[in-house]
Length: 252
Length: 270
Image 1 (cartoon, chains in turn red, purple):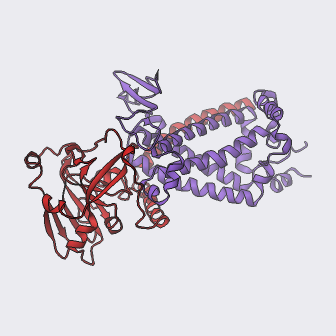
Image 2: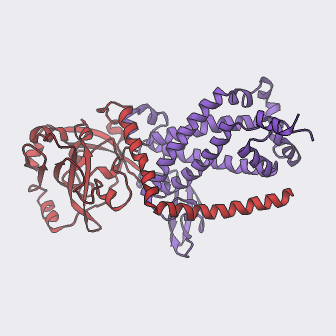
Image 3: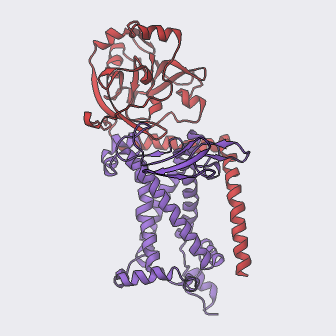
């Protein structure tokens, strides 16, 4: 009796394991199940925002803690003729355009941008894949631009447009105004005391230190203030959100 | 005394225990398999705050040529067919670290793996918290997992450990109170390993690093937290395997039945 039952148990466990795998893949393809899974993003966002002060700083390190090599990921060179031409002259002609729901939409040259107040911070870059690198970033706090160009009351998100394309689509990212006004959110143009290398997003990249690496948009050409993310790309707020199931909130 | 009264009034496993056991088993299975998908995105582990491809990894799974390998420190172990280089169900060679049969989803998708992981992480964390509260409240912890003074004697622990290698002793043990090895194991899993999974998981989050910087520091940095997260998961797999062997040796049908229906606390005299 026991032996038969035991054999039955083992057989059904093996069938169960096989069924579990194909079952999981079927669930993974089900839109309603995906919606249920993605509800964790709302929970993560709500709880992580509630746990700390909204202006709480991410850890900052000393120069002794720097990664010997700061790994580059994603696009390592936009390689378009326009980008190559700008890179050839040290990005002297690069323009940052502030568009959308600003009281005073305007453009900044790299020279104008470098004459604004600067912030230098040594922070840890956490990639969604699992690796981390510590680097020293210098750039203009995003708040400075927001104060100069002044957001309209209806603005809720800031969209960062980039010069690089991945799989034929332009890269973009977006953040809300809590991160937009956070003191460590900067448009960086220097890494480890040197002009930002092309592989790391020259001449301008976003640093939004309380989120993962894919939020740190590189090769920034413009910031668009919007009331909703609906009309941008496919409406999910970023390149990786549009092409795969990455979450807009990347605090974990 | 009729048998069913004994079962309903004094079940071997309380309702809260049985409910949590089922939910928790499902959560841990999904968390392990979706966790291996996430690990596959960067199959290298480091100590310290940072760590990427140019830094020294104490553990790495990879593929070179046609062979897969696991590297632990300076020791390289060939794992072709299992880790790093294996064939999927259609016979194609894949070079992801963990094979498709061990991951959710079975094909590589970091984004989907993360969705599964975080959703079930919430159920797991809430379930564990409620189980802990309920088990202190109904005195399951104090009554069944409490270590008596004499149980701390090394000779007692040693004897109990040896009993776990004797099939005849294991076969008779199914209706007895938990022995010292069971108590230590269940306390270790419930109060150390499972919370450690939650806290090392949170310690990898950049937002938590801003909210609770001490948490990441406690584990010696984000990459150390990632290593501890992986090693703790490996210990939980080890616990699961031994747990399964013990269930199979001590009478799997009555054990599984008791974990579903409750079972009887003392062996009914028939």
